[in-house]
Length: 373
Image 1 (tube, rainbow, N blue to C red):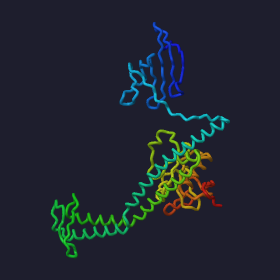
Image 2 (image 1 turned 135 degrees about the vertical axis):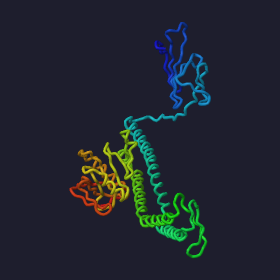
Image 3 (image 1 turned 180 degrees about the vertical axis):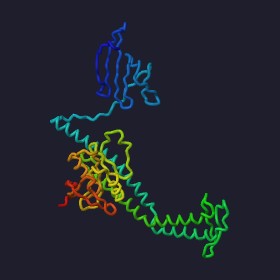
């Protein structure tokens, strides 16, 4: 084969085949062979065929379980079914404009695919939080639960003398004279059972007191993902979408996850965004003194931290981070002032409220149907 002479090169029917007719130099008998390259997706192959269209050898052997065309030595090679092609007799007047439009069409299709993928991911996170929120007990139901456990604890305490080790239930009467059966906890000695139920009542009371905090945290996280969904859906250019859906340039980024916030990368700079008040507080605690802190002026919004590693940040990073801060905090179009400074100039007040000094401001325009002035 190495010294064969190429007699003919053809593409039958302008299909997916490149066919080379060869004359082997070493053959004592003049006999031509064909090297056929087939570009057919998962069955792409290179096949040697004799003059009778019988397979001599192939790069990939294919049996009848995989395709109607069996490709094995000694088997006649069947022809490929014709590939349906569009008739494009249209004359191209301007090749540059034609190629530019082709690129625009390709880019729009790529953006839509990327959008769909990211929107599904964001929707999945949001739906998971909504399920947690819907399952969250109300303060009223928790207080009723606390009252129930308090009552059980008092009944157990009053009937402690009846409980023997290894009893699984207590059958007695409540304080209204009604018969009651109480299931006893496993592994708890009798003189500690009332304490167990008192603790259950205490936990339920604490949950009732704090359930509104958990509800607020979940609601603000859901709102964060709603804003993210809206921002991705509104993105109209590859540049804008790449900012919202950054590429993972380094392998270690795939494994890196931070529970306290949402993690992004802007041109190899790590960016952390708080999804609610609790996470905004956590960000301030984990940020280093030279990291950059960001927040929309005079508007409740996500806090954002840019990890600097003590480097000076390019203006482009500040501008892109400011856009993220706005996009993930608001859906309304308009012009917004985003203040930023080093973390060491931010003082934590009550909750996630802060005072900050020695700051600069970047103006961010959020595109939409209407821009407020």
